[in-house]
Structures are given as structure tokens and as C-alpha cells.
Length: 97
Image (cartoon, rainbow, N blue to C red):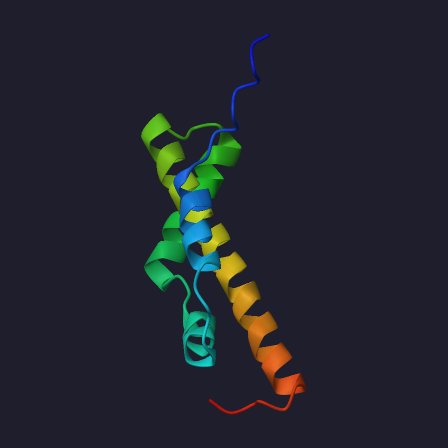
């Protein structure tokens, strides 16, 4: 009997696994919460999203949009972990550091 193929693991999964192995510090957590896309990247993402909705996006542009979405997803996950750490350490009375 053949075994089922293992699920496809992409670079996002691999990168997030690396972060799970590390202890997130309060300093790094605060820094992560400051990260975000700049105005030019936001404008490019919007332009690509519009082209995608209109059905005029090229395969190259679709890959570019996908890359932005993956980066945004990673940032969102890391920022959620940072918020959880800061909230937890503040509640436990270890708010300094």
C-alpha cells in the first residue's frame, strides 16, 4: 500500500518554523510591531490587486502579488506572536526588559 504524499511545505512554513525555535524577546517583539510596508510597496500591491481583479494580471505580476501576500502573512503572524508576548509579560508583572 502506497503512503500518502507529504504536504507541500513552502518557504513561509520553513521560515515560521525557524521563528518557533527561538525565544522572542520583548525588544525584538517591539521592533517587529514597528515593521510594515512602505508607501511604494503598498501602491504596487494595490496596482497588482486591481489588475488581478480585472483579469489583466500577467503570470509574472501574479507571482509578484503572491510574494507580497506571503510576506504580509509572515509579518502578520510574527506581529501576532509579538503582541501575545508583550501582553503576557505585562500581565505577569514582568513588564520591563
